[in-house]
Every structure is written in structure tokens, then in C-alpha cells.
Amino acid sequence: MKAVDVINKVKDLNELAETLKGVRQSGKTVVHCHGVFDLIHPGHIRHFEAAKREGDVLVVTITQDQFVNKGPGRPVFNQRLRAESVAALQWVDFVAINRWPSAVEAITLLKPSVYVKGGEYAAPENDVTGMIVQEEEAVTAGGGRMHFTNEITFSSTELLNTHFDVYPDDAQAFLKGFRQRYSAGAVIKQLDRLRKLKVLVIGETIIDEYHYCQAMGKSPKELLVTTKYLREEVFAGGVLACANHVAGFCEDVHLVTCLGSKNSHEEFVRTHLKPNVTAQLFHRDDSSTIVKRRYVDHAFLSKMFEVCFLDDSAVPSHIERDLCAYLKSVLGEYDVVLVADYGHGLLGADTIGQLCAGARFLAVNTQTNSANAGYNLITKYPRADFLCIDEPEMRLACHDRVNDLRKLMTRTAAQLHSRRAVVTRGHLGCMSYSAEEGFFEIPVFSSKIVDRVGAGDAYLSVAAPCVASGMPMDLVGFVGNAVGALAVRIVGNRSAVEPVPLYKFITALLK
Image (cartoon, rainbow, N blue to C red; front, side, top):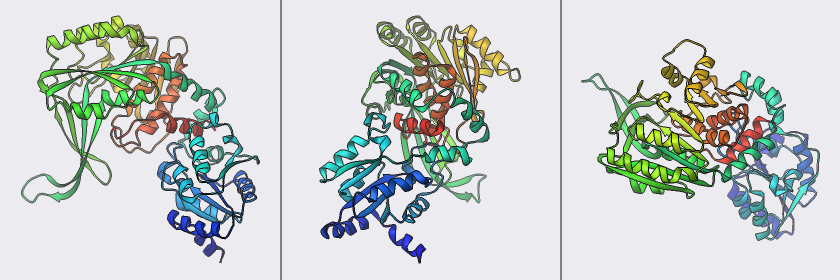
């Protein structure tokens, strides 16, 4: 009988809205709570009990799985289980799963007389999402009021981190020590300070196309697998993605890049940059804008084949002259210059020389890919204040496959007159280094990968301003790996890594 009661308490959001109309017409007061409620604990029980005292009917909306921004591995329990767990509590009359990322729309739909949050939300400045103010406005607009409970508090995240294997073993061990040195609030405060940095981003524009296909089987006449085209997506990749990542954390971002005059995709480029990114676009008449077209299995996102539309020869000399002249005139205005060098011809020797001579703080990534393997090495830069590459790229630059990575990083950093460096290592996490602090090894914080494309760009884009702001390198490595864990859950460059999900993830990691 109790199981039937629980099931009947869980309702569709629209159905619940209709039910509450009748409740209000009968003169009863509707009270509304909202949250993730991933692990029900005594704090939640006290919270619901206190909320029920504010009215007659208590409804609880649950954050949908896809909107639980607490990082990889969360929620531990899916939305249906979480809804049924809450519905099993005697103080709760109805439960619904929210359809939207925030509670604002649900509040507008349900029109509660009282909207109840925990006491930790009473100070809006402590809410990393910034949504509590909008929630209060929605409640007030519907004729209701806010109420904050002051009950015993626990943290679902802290309990899950302690008693569940939410993160890999090496990450658990690392975080246990890291939490002794840094709190989530202190880390977020340092990240907030990045907003005032002025950043110039330079590199090649890449248009990423994902053509989703379904394998139909082997052709009876040819040695090939025939695939059926289903749909496609187009993403702003390459340096465009870097600019968009940075723009979430820094208010003033300037992009310098080059498009081809043939099939320039300029309208796409301009409309897919964030509003706080200004762009200086150069055009080369001898080629088209770079497009990388990937054919992807739609079910598992496995990449089957890639076609590149690119001319990776050096830009014409007159373009390089104009580019150098422009850089000379503007570099001094920026706190950080971020170079995303994909080795496709934009960044020649003269441009590199101008960047090294004029940038106040120069962060460099040189990428090894199928078009430039062995030719696009970090050592072509005579100077970098911060270098950020992956381990194969570091080993290629040093012509060394076997020796200790620390020796290679020290040697390369000295060669580039760099006092800060990070080498990303895939499933092994990253190694960060500074001449003053030495080396730090930071493990990965997620073993679930949706798509690796763009993860390195996201890491570089957030890590570079962190280094420029003076963050310790163990913290830079931690933030970078948190960014990477979020980035590998994004298909291609469908979206940038944003501050609020990152802050929530950092808070979850450091509980």
C-alpha cells in the first residue's frame, strides 16, 4: 500500500500544476521546495518538516539528471529514484521532476504561496549559481514569499564523496589532501578575480562538422562499410572555441584569426562567438576557411572517418606583415596573450617573433595532429611564460620517448624561459610545474568520456588566465583537470565550459 502511495505522489509537472489549482481554490496554502536531493539525509528530513509547517500542502520539484551540474559521476541516483525517495517522506505531499535547468519556470507554473530554501541560501552572494534572486522574483511575481529554514545541515555531496566511490581511487586520495589546503569558496574567489583580465587569443579558426551516421553493413561488392546519413552539427572549433571558453571567465576577450576568402564561413564565425569576444579577422585569398568534417556513429559517438578541407601552407607574406603590424599595435593592451597553434600555417616565424617580443604574458599551446606530426613543436617559440601541451607533444619536442617527464619539462621550460608549465596526460591526469614550487601530479576526476575533441583547448583556455593571475601550480592543475572532466562530457565544441557548472563541480570535489 505504501508503495502505491509513493507512486501516486510522483506526478508530471503539468498534472501537478492542475492539482494545485484545486488545492488553492479550497483555501489551502501551497509550499514548494526544490533541489537535487541525491542522497536523502537528516538535514533534508528536517528541512521538509520545517517547510511543511509553513503551509498545508508541500510539493517538491527534483532537478532533472541532465541539469545536475555537480560534475561527472553525479547524480549517483537517477531522477526517478530521487523522486520516489523524496515522495516516501511523510511530510511531502507531491513530487515532480523539473523540466528546466533552474526552479524559476517551475515556480512560475506551480505558483506556491511559500518557496522554501535552506538557510545557506539566505545570503545571495553565497549562491554560486546566482539563481536565488531570480527564484525570489518568480515567487513574488506569483504572490508568494520566500522562507529560509534554519535546521541542522548536512551535505549530500560530502556524504557521497566520503562513503561512495564517486571518483576514481587516485582522485579520492588526492582530494583528501587537497581539501586540507584549499576550500571551494577560496578557489571560486580566485577564479572570480579572472574577470578583470584582458585576454587576446590568436590561432587558426576551425569549423568542426559532425555528420552522424548509422552503419548499414559491408557492401557486397566492395571492402567497405556502408553508412546511412542521419543528421549533422556544426561547431565553432579551434581558436573560436578557445575564445568562447575564456570569455566565460574574463570579461574582455579579443580574437585574432584568419579566414579563407573562399567559403569563409565568416557569418557563422561572427554569430558563434560570445558577445564579449571582439574579433579581428584577416582573410587569405588563396584558400578557404579550415573545415574538419568527422563522420560519427550516432549511437556511441565513435568517429569513423575524417575529411579535412584545409590549405596548411604558410599565410601569404603580405598577410603576415599586416598581422605583425596589427599585433605590434595592440599586444601591449592585454594582460594575457593566449596562442592556440594548430600548425595550419597562420603562425609563421615573424608572427611568433612579434608575439614573443610584445606580449606581457604569453601562454602557448602547439598541437600535434595528423596534418603536422613532428613539425609543429613548442620549441619553435623562443619564449613562453606558460606552456601547456600534452605528453606526446612534449616528448616529440624533446625527441625522447622514454625518459622521465619531469626532466623533459624542466629542459623545455628552461629553453623557452618559462617558469610555468603543464603537461596533460589523458587518463593519467596532468603534471604541473613551476620553477619555484616544483612538480605536482593531479589525477583525472572522471572516467566517463563522451568526446575528447576540444578538451585540451578548454584546459588551456582556463588554465592560462589562472597562471597569469598568480595561482599556485597545484591549484592550476586542479582547476584544469576539473575543466577537462567537464569538457570531455561535451560533444565536440557544442558548448563552452562555463563558470557556474565549474564552480558547482569544484564545490562537489572539495566537500
